Length: 228
Picture 1 (cartoon, one colour):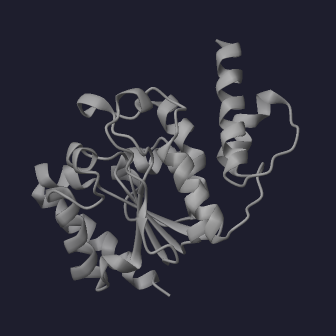
Picture 2 (spheres, one colour):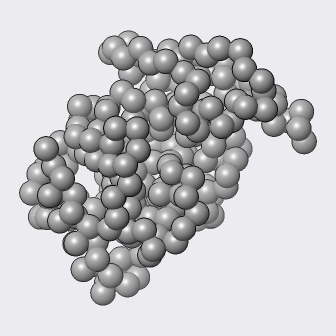
Picture 3 (tube, one colour):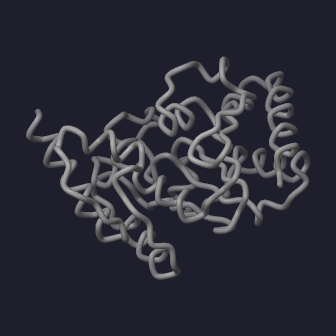
């Protein structure tokens, strides 16, 4: 098992090197922690790096989701946005249509942004913890998340958002490493690496529990109050 983990880590590092990261020799047992903390890499931000990063995401084969996917749903929106929204994983409609914005969940999210934040979705950057849809609506596994997290960290470094809104418990947990319930952390402010994280409920949860919309409304008002 240890050898398998080491092989996966090395594969991740080689692929990350291709998208512009530089890494130094560290003890292999420390590599995963350094990936999470982003202490291991330095960034080269330019148009070529952005395009090459996306090309590597589209061709990624680091986890089992690469074997079952129809399409990779890469992040999209304003690459200079002050606000980034991070969801858990693409939906069936997103994967089957190869579109980032489609379906009731996407429309509800857009309505919240435009009606509460009072800004168009074109000024936001949107992405997911994992870029491929887990089959049969299964939750994200730690292996899937940690295979994809370096891509997310690269997106954050390139966009440099001031505010990150995590949609749902999985997005919050895998971005921060905090296992607390989303009900316990939603609406709070978490300062991290130069940006502020605002966790809120998942859109799917709101579709099942319409009464919870008032909490997300409060969270969006908090986001609006922090907009530079």
